[in-house]
Length: 205
Image 1 (cartoon, rainbow, N blue to C red):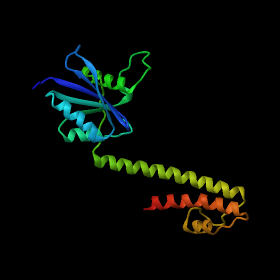
Image 2 (cartoon, helix red, strand yellow; image 1 turned 180 degrees about the vertical axis):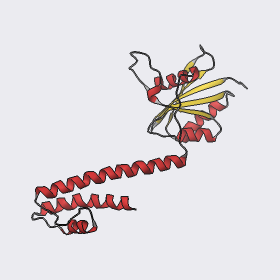
Image 3 (cartoon, one colour; image 1 turned 180 degrees about the horizontal axis):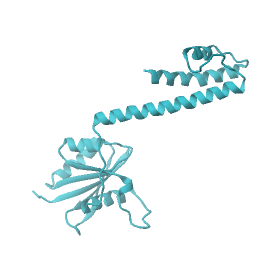
Image 4 (cartoon, one colour; image 1 turned 60 degrees about the horizontal axis):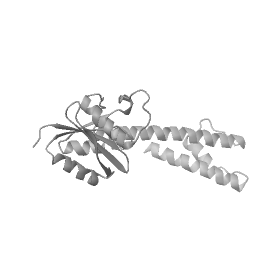
């Protein structure tokens, strides 16, 4: 059983994970190890083979659209894993050609050299709250845009609300009862009103 460290760079995508390893020592070998599918079951097979070598394993991958699933999966097994910021990974001048395999090799090499900056990995509860806040912000922006589009459409056809304040229950009722002269316009007004009403319902829950 070896006590040396293997630094393992992962280039993670939806459908694939490129795995590269850097052995301990400044001039030790850095090599491509394996490519797996993006499913955890396939990734676990590669992890099992790496664990069977007896090395201490230190994984690293870039923060990205796949989130923190792999980080949590590895740390629950007691394995060391770091998630790093892509913008803070050192790059050589003129380095422009990127491939998944090269990225994995670079991560392994940089992790061994201590050149990477880790990001904070939120707890699952924190991430769920963040997702909720972001979803609400997106919904609010969509609501504002839908309101602007609907009011602009009505103004072009001289449909003016006589009440004091828009977007009240009375204004919503007026919108739902509004009749435009042409069937195509009536169909269009309904198609514009319907998503706005749905967004309003989501935001009020």
